[in-house]
Amino acid sequence: MRRSVRCYVALGSNLGGPIEQVERALKALARAPALTLVAHSRLYRSRPMGPAEQPDYINAVAMVETTLAPLELLDRLQAQERRQGRVRGDVRWGPRTLDLDLLLYGDDTIRSARLTVPHPGLRERNFVLYPLHELSPELVLPDRTRLSELLKACPAEGLEPVCGRET
Figure 1 (cartoon, rainbow, N blue to C red):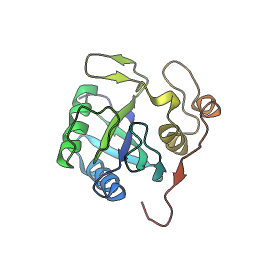
Figure 2 (cartoon, helix red, strand yellow; figure 1 turned 90 degrees about the vertical axis):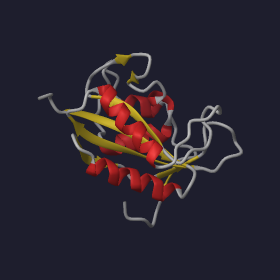
Figure 3 (cartoon, rainbow, N blue to C red; figure 1 turned 60 degrees about the vertical axis):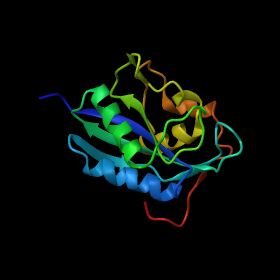
């Protein structure tokens, strides 16, 4: 049996009822075999990174424990994206029903054709850093960078908690 590993997964949606899409994905993570949803951040609204002609995103971060290997976890996340209507198109950072990104897999650093961990965008995306900090304020990345240091260089501009909903 494999050891249990603490991982962090970013969730994002801006199509098909984004709040409901993120909540549905969180429920799916909670029910998934070989995966335990430990906690998740509040939901946040953020401006799109890609083309401006798209709706704002709803984002969150989930903390999970798993015995799955990194690529097995990636496969599960991508399968959930497809179940929720994700179609990978040609537009980078375009609109989507669901985006699930593996941010951290324990203290591992992974560089393969299919997966890079820590996630390459983790350090500069406020819609990832602030929800991640909400879950683990003392978090230290595999390269020994403190999450709190990354926040100092990444303003929360354009990021707002989604109020009035139980998550």
